[in-house]
Length: 426
Image 1: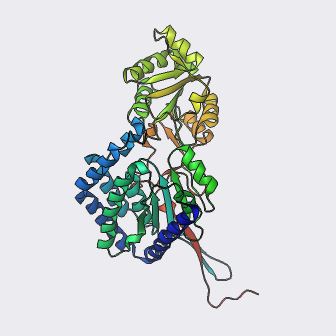
Image 2: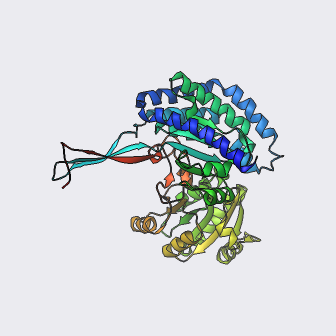
Image 3: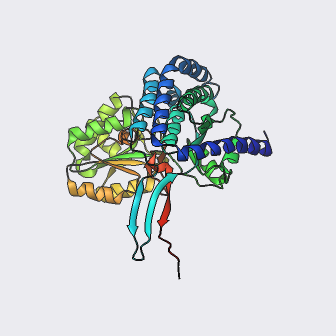
């Protein structure tokens, strides 16, 4: 497909989405919520079809050289299909962000000034591997009064189209335009820059996937982009940590589901407790199948404890999102050193401290420049569902205009409404 063909396809699809967005923007919140509940029912009713289509994608995973983590993200189990449906219902149950007043006040001259939330319009999402993003993104866009254009990866094409078909059934049942959810059914890469350059038709692009995809979209885009870069997440064990709590959080953050963006990739241990804590947690991590890549200080401590032949950590290891049972380990002098390490090597996604010291926790929260900072909690909680958002359209590592897990409210902008009584400016 050449550039002109790609542009024409996107303009046609985006034009239809824009008409749907105009309808959604003025639809009552109750109607959009009814559509979300109908979409959830349609997802459940289509379970067998969804799994059949998903198996077609799974069968091609070797052809696309998918890693084990990517295959895990791709797979639609009964539990994951139910979670998709439940997320849509959870989104429907939330307070409607559209039309909500952010601020309102009267000026001395009698003018009434109001700042009110409104939809963005058409939101484009470009993503890889995870078909549940189709339902999550569509649901959040619908709740916030936006139409969405979704371009999933070729490795999940059958799954994404099947989910979109179910969502369109829900829209139709609620008498809303089915064009509000558009899944691009071609894997051709020329469509990505065309989508990112659809000025006047698409209002925002959200790329989710590997760093290469995100950088390519950001370079090509002529419309706003919110980037969702890698989750190089850290757990820092402070000198004032409860050892049992610290061990539990470190294991959960790394091992509970290692192939996702909020899994821990680096363990930092305060020098004051490293000799007592590190051998204990390392033994449990190794037992769980984790490969440790250690700096010189942590290797020495583990060797003295009888855990020899640990792999040495390179500079790149501390910058890497492994998405596997691999963990970089370092001993840091103190809290300030931990914060410096995280701000140097991290991806501003999610970082955690384990400590019983309130002042240490406060210093960590203030110093770490990340979209989510956890205190005595696993990094795995950095998630739209866990934050009560129902789902997320992604986890933004940007600072404008949204940061961290993005829910329906983050897919709105605002307008100013000024009401007078015949006011004229002199």
